[in-house]
Length: 429
Image (cartoon, rainbow, N blue to C red; front, side):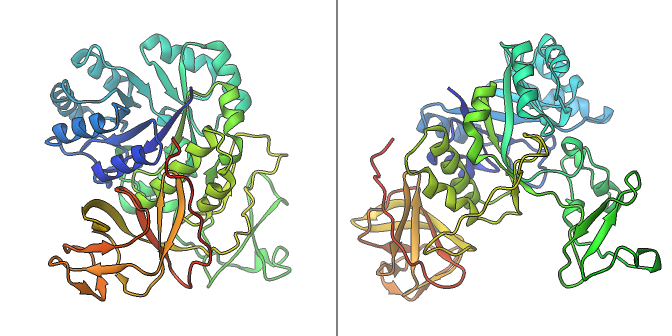
């Protein structure tokens, strides 16, 4: 069966990924992860990781060590690899061939996956990496579905992993120099400033007058004179280098049929709420849940750029994902927090991330619960006394008669009220 692989920037996100349907998760360690600004995992959290894996029946966990190493980093890599011998990682994600050699020397039984940073997008390269000892290749995002079919046919025993959702880089599989140029932060060392997503002003001059025949601005690429790319401008600025976000929720079957073994969600630096909503939507797609269309709608309630299918299909095909009309919903949900353990009947301990006040309408979501609306809850302080609001960083409780469970997420609309209630079968596996 195909694997659903979700991001885990820290322990709490790891638990959420598993709770909301991921078969496996990936996370980084200090120094050597391409998400250096994610919390990652400290080297003293080994026992905690083992506990989480045991809690979720030993779902798989992959360790990203996928930077491109400089010479003076190799000794640190050897030292860290030795420290990981008893860690509960099922595989290591590596870009640098030299790093792969070091990991294999220090951890001879370790499974190693080739990072997307290596830009493997053809069958010849895939077979070479397989001979070098990689058990899986995470294809560059530039590989199409037809490419995937040919790669799998050429190397049937090699596992294929591909991204299905999340942000994309404007450079070739993340190998971008913009960040280093503008801010001296190297993308290949895990410290990308995401310069492609900054706002840029497009300055017009007399040479552009023939282009500017309306209020629309345009770009002309040097190698394609006379072919203009329109730019939408807002308040004098536009994100001209920012790519659309990837969304393959409607094409999971096509990827599976092409031979993909693992469907990967991007987002180790994104919120726990994002992780939950996206993971459960793709879980429903893989499982062919009859209510998939309802969970799909929630992908448009999380922060995102316009969705597309990126490079998976021929450019003549429509690559934009249509945004649904969702009765009773608006965008911009606020992530309020997480429900922890039930401390008394109907009273739940909370991990609060955003303020909520008495009388507001909130919503609970779970892996198999689309939404439960609640406006009759009570907020309690550490002495179980009723209060008017709860805030981040305090011991607080929520009292409700709704059928909530540990691990459910609490959210509310940024503006307006939730107009519909949908309670799904919480016993569904």
